[in-house]
Every structure is written in C-alpha cells, then in structure tokens.
Image (cartoon, rainbow, N blue to C red; front, side, top):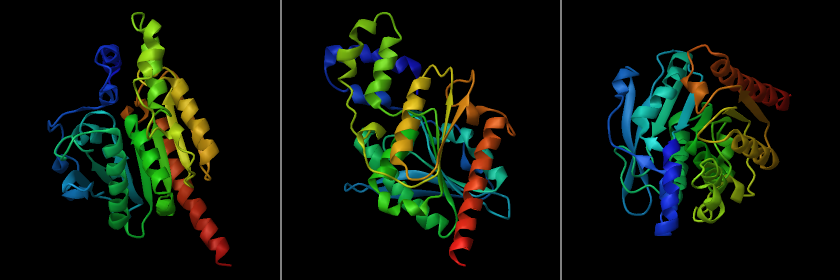
Length: 295
C-alpha cells in the first residue's frame, strides 16, 4: 500500500466522495511473466459477478516432485499480480504450487476495483482453489490490503472453510477507517482533520465489522516499524482474529522491519522459515488428529 495515497485523502474533504477508491492503485503493466517463474503453469480466467466478467489468474506448478500443497496469494493494493508474485514465487522451490490472481480492475482482469468487488473476487478464487487442489492442503497468504480481503472472504463463506488448512497475514489491518485515520494523524497538515476525513472512508467489509467465526490456524506477521500500515493495526487484527477464530492464532513481530518485509527478505530468512514451519506444523497436527480419530 503506497504511503503517499493517504495524503490524497485530504482531497476527500473537498470532493466528499470516492474516498474508498484511494485504497486501489492498479495498473496493467507486465512486471513478470509466468514462464520466468515456472516451466509448468496454467494461465486462465475465473468467472465472477453477474456481468460476465472474469479474473486473470496463474497457477504456477512447483518443480518439486513431492508437492506439499497449494498457496493462494492475495496481493496488495498497487500494480498487479505480475509485480506482487515476486514476494511469493519462492514457495515453488519449497514444494508448493502457487495460485495468484488479480482483483477486478487490476492487470488483465475485467471490471473496476471496489470493496465489494474485491471480496466477491476473493470468494470466487477460493472456490477455484478448492477445485485445483482437490484433496491436497490449501494455504492462504494475504499481504497488506490482500489480508483484509482474504479475512472478509473467509468470514463470508465460513461453511466452506474446512477446505483450507492455514492462513498467513502479513502487514495487514483490521479496519479501513482506522488505518486511514492513523495515516491522517501522522501528517501535520492533516492531523486536525483526521476524524472528519477518516469518516469519509467506510468500514464495510473490514474484518472489524464481522462477527462471523472461522476455524483456520492463523499466523499474523507485522514489522514493528511499518510506515504504511501501523504496527498497532496488526495487533488489533490479531486480537480480533483471536476472538473470532476457532483455530489457533499466532502473532510474529518483525522487530525493526517495515511493510511486507518478511516475504521480501532473503531465502532461508528467520521469518520465511517460520512460515514454512507453521505450514508443516499445521499439516502434522491435522494428520495426527485424523489418526487419533480413526482409532
């Protein structure tokens, strides 16, 4: 999420509308091609909505013979999946297939971005992931804005959440309004206007607005010096999920690190290894539960 976009929120006081659109900064540039990341991939479309629109998606296949599962990636607010896939392509070398996609209005996807559309898009992608993975494990990774979208989609379709094994949220937030207010408060010129202007940003589909529970082991990661989504937002999201999530919830602080620092760190870093260990532990725990229940 671009830091400067929140400065533009000042203009919302003049136009009195459209503030929610400040969370979306899509483009259609091609930063990375799928063939640069995987010898085997599927470039396909996912139907969404009632107007015949489709989402552009990639299913990148891991070269590792013994597959560990499918990662579903929900990217952040700027550019498109061909840029953000660079945060998660390393999962391929670890034995995970990767499903990444663009919300409406991003990249080659149809339509326009909006809060409601993004949650509907995410729900359609989760349904597609179940078809792709079949019986294998499915792990959801949401970064920044993508984390809030993933949580809203999971809460919307909680009856199907048993199909997903784990959720990782990096540098995400619990409330659209509160993250806008915190950024307004961080600038001298907008500090006096933080409350009236932040109320022009709705909290519809924010994780904070849902009391629906879901049952997925969840790992939250946040940099203590994140200048884009404040660290406090990560703590609030962790507290919220701990209350509504019937599965286990963990919070990992990256001391001194910034926005989406974990997946931007080198291969084999402490944070990336923690994510891999989390996935491994989740699968091992579920296998043990199935074994115990079969006795």
